[in-house]
Picture (tube, rainbow, N blue to C red):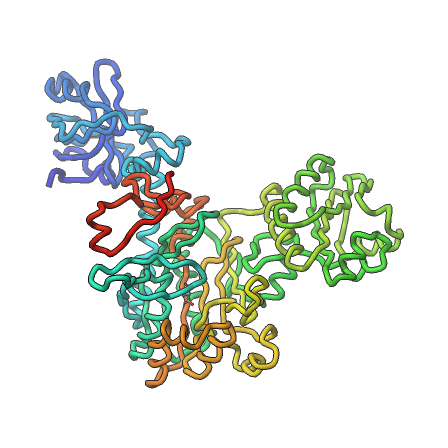
Length: 592
Ligand code: ASP
């Protein structure tokens, strides 16, 4: 080994020891003829002192080195002089008096500082990801991710789960996105699909009698670059046999509750057990099925008061089956007209045509965009229902229910950010259950599964699949924390007939269904146990635990937002010969 100790482990009790260390020059400064180097490795930083009186060689070498050079030093550990201790450093009570310094590898000047947390353009960070990962923030994210995954493995192993790898080269395993396809050289014109999740494979493992499976599984989804998505990401994929939804939820809840206590003890769970919300209830109260429960500001339905209120905009929306709902942004009553206009623009992105308001100053004075059209009793009925008090700002959207939910659901979070109500140290987990089994797809004029093809309906709703599918609920459960859906799962169909019926319901041609999923249907005929599972997203959960704003920060080598690896430059053109071997011809080559 090039080192006897790491740069993070030396303490006062090591004083007097001769040690050899190796790492990167984090910082170098000359002071009164003596050179100080903060030497860094993965484990920490230690101060190394090169004094010309002790070792002219080491001192000369130390003056020559620059940031990020890789060096090896041998020297003696000693207590730092009185008053020179650094309480911010684990090794801050000691320093190493160098006798010998060897340069193992010099370094070019890095394109950004490694020794300082500063804003660096993300493209540059991704281009030099190996340097970016040297930075403290990234180093601790990698460590946190490792710890979380290790905890998961140990937890599940102790409960009889088997970790089983499933193929990456497979056949379409849809989760609602486009597949990544891999051409086969051996079978001209044929393609593998990369799994969007190991869904079918884990179910087949249940048919195989594994009973408890998990995998830290890579999933591939070819989606248009929007928001915080990556072409490949990692799930804790898990499946269990002979379980009801309660069993899967209980195990998952226990796993993550314990994981958080072990890995990020500074975070606090808002409630245990995790609250459960029916899908419909989540929509009505929070406008979304991934609510942030760290604060109130719930949506209030005033459609009944809007009806016949005299305010045309509200009345016509209600008459055509729409809703009028509002929320109370307590504390923003003195928002200016311009600030309210800004919020109106914000909700316009989600389809809201306007944002009606009632604003109360601290001394109870009211301003409103629409109160003048209403009878005073109606205004006070609205105030009462929304518990308005001085300093409050009541905001309303009138539209089709989906638009009202989306606009107010997003606005609620935006306002909470402005009001500082989203404490990153609080984790408000909850479960969303009782999802609709299918949702109507206007464009395609058919039902779509609200989860995926293999989710079972609630047993008591199975008959509705024939009579009124839109009212049937699925045995799906989503795991949500702080405005993020971090996992979803379900109890599966384990019966060929029911599976075929669902294929038919969602308009899958029986021949296509047989080609794509024949192996599943066939397997279901060989004694399939009742089973169910879940797949929490590792990237997203670690992102939240790390307090990072996007999943790229907790992935070692993510793609950029245009799905490109800017370090290795992928995707990239290949040799014509490779294409020929794959029986592929590129038709229209878009220039970047
Ligand atoms: N395969 C599902 C997903 O990727 C999760 C599950 O149903 O277990 O979302």
